[in-house]
Amino acid sequence: MLAIKNNLMSVNAARHLSDSYDALSKSVERLSSGLRINSAKDDAAGLAVRELMRADIAVIQQGARNAQDGISMLQTMEGALATIDEILVRMQSLAEQAATGSYSSAQRSIMHNEFQEMRQEIDRIAGATKFNGIKMLDNTTTVSIHFGELTSDKIDVTGSNMTSASGGLAITALAIDTAASAKAALATLDSAIGTKDIARAKFGYKMNRLEGTVNVLNIQAENLLTAESRVSDVDVATEMAEMTRNQVLAQAGISMLTQANAMPQMALSLLSR
Image: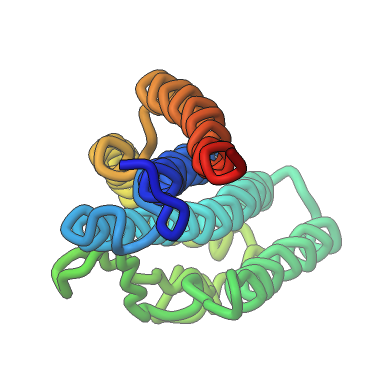
């Protein structure tokens, strides 16, 4: 019907053009953000799944960082034990040197002074070595490295007392100012080196365990990221095809709207005759 009050064809064309522009806008939003889901109205269920996955991924990634921090802490302690190892070897060498009868008392006194300086340095290292304020070489405090949602997702690391006192290496009373005391010191130093080796090995296998934990957590995070990507990320090829379709529809809608708006002119031409 040819009418001038209501241009129904124009209204219809405008509605379809609006739908095409809305779809085109959505495609541009998805391609510019890289996400298929930009708001809850895009996919309410998918959004809920994605946010839960993102929370799990964040926990796992932070857990991996916690484990790496634990490794760094243990590396700090193990590095200090490497220095203590060198000091104990030097002390044992001095004791062996002082145990022979070819040195005078004055010479043994010099050896003894160096020996005591080495012992004091062990105490200084054990007390001064720390990571974020945490000391593990002058006490037996347990530090828990946490890396998951459960309370059981942790690895406990116990410190080792590496001081020269009886609670640690038990070398406080050692002296090498005589040949007899130097010979006695050798056995005690052997025991002290064994104690140090046990502590160093303990830190070593804890580091290996934490490294394994980091690898597992990284794999878990990677797999969850893959799943989250399937839910949330836009398929660029598919969305580009959809955008091209919407562009064509929008251009066609503009042309048809122009034609529909010209229809009332036909009625005017009839009225003018």
